[in-house]
Length: 203
Ligand code: SF4
Image (cartoon, rainbow, N blue to C red; front, top):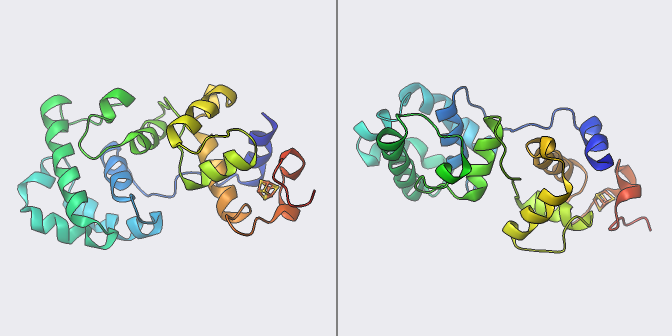
C-alpha cells in the first residue's frame, strides 16, 4: 500500500508515545491515557510503576491513595476504579498476566475496544486497527472510509490495510496527523501522500 510505505519513510519514529517496560505497565498506561495526552501519562507513570509492580499492589492500598497517585491524568476516580477492577480480574481469571486476545482484553473493567486494540498491537498480536481522532480524520480524508463511527471505520480499514500493517498503520496516521495533516490547517504542500489524497487542498 503506497500510503503506508511513504508514511513509514516520512515518519520512521512513529511508534507508541507511552513509556512502559512490562505488559502490565502497558495496560495501565493505555488505561490512564483516556481523555488525556500521552505526555501527561508519561509524567505520572515513572513513580507509579516503582510503587505498583504487580496487580496485587493496586489492590492493597486504599483506593484514595491510588486516586492520588494517578490524579494528574484526570478522571482519576473512574480510572482508579477501572484499574482496580482490571487487576482483580487479571488475578482471578488470567493468573496475573495481561491476556493477548481481544475478546479477553475487552472483558477487563474499563477496557474498551480501542484500549484493547492498542494493547494487543503493542504486544505483537494486533487483531484490529486502532481508531482515534487522527486515524478517523485521515482515513476519511484519504478516502479509505466514508463512515464516522469508529467501529465501522475500523471495519473499512481492515479491508484495505494488509494484516501485517495493522499495528503500525494507526501510528503512521497519528504522527502524520499531528505533524502534517492538522484538523484545521493541513499542510498539503508538505505532504508526502498529497498526490494520493482526494482531500488535498492543492487541487
Ligand atoms: S494532502 Fe493534505 S489533506 Fe491529504 S493527507 Fe496530506 S495534508 Fe492531509
